[in-house]
Figure 1 (tube, rainbow, N blue to C red):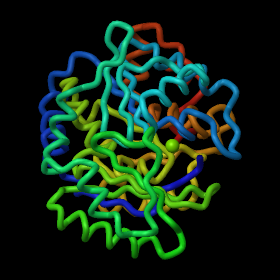
Figure 2: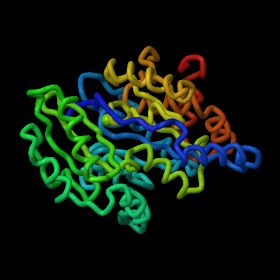
Figure 3: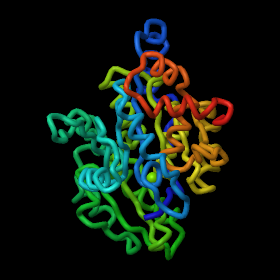
Figure 4: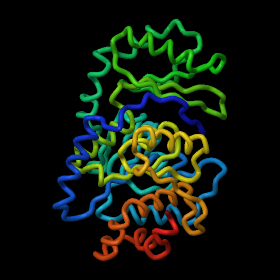
Length: 333
Ligand SMILES: [Mg+2]
């Protein structure tokens, strides 16, 4: 499915949790004893090849090697469900993550003794925004709109209500109406919408206001006692824009649509976060910037000291060594 979000409710770059994480980072930099990296990456069209762009034949292997570093904690951040994510890990031979953020950020799982445990504290935190309302009340409030059709049950969860959106009328017209109806329900919400270009249908996710991908990543950082200087996010599409334009260091892979690149540049500038966004480039022959190769470029751009220290300590980190050996900061910049 190739789709991209055309409209998102953005939050200020200085969210309360982001401010705490930034302050914590300033304190921890002075006494940091070892590098740690929480690598958060979208899956479809970020590390999983999708669409017309070619994947470098060595990109995924190098990505797997890098993720085997003991200093790297890996989190997949996806719009997909846990079942879809775990199937994709097997199908595309991806490294096993420590955490999975699914359903556009509404669920977080941690790997524990061979199973995936849902993080209950996250569910508790996001539950307040809907003010005790459930799907039944929200669906009832939106029932009068003929241009909204409920998505399949596999695309729904307790805090994610998803509809197909008819493109018969301008989507913004419907979205404005949805906002009005939900406001009357006194719920705090976030709308994430996109267009499935293949099926020519809109996709609308209604989420608690504090439950997007960015919120989930910031929550995970706090849970792991890490700060904003110890995380990198990689993405490609509109549902990734709230993270790409935030204080979280991010890389937009080179295969992203031109429209997404434009929006990412504009939004990150608007939130004064341009220096926290890296646009992977395709002109490097070894690391062409598409998919996992773009993620590697982003790590090299933001964490050269991490690469150098990893090489010095000779940890089992072939991916880092490869990047250090074949690339120069200049060639990626
Ligand atoms: Mg994607």
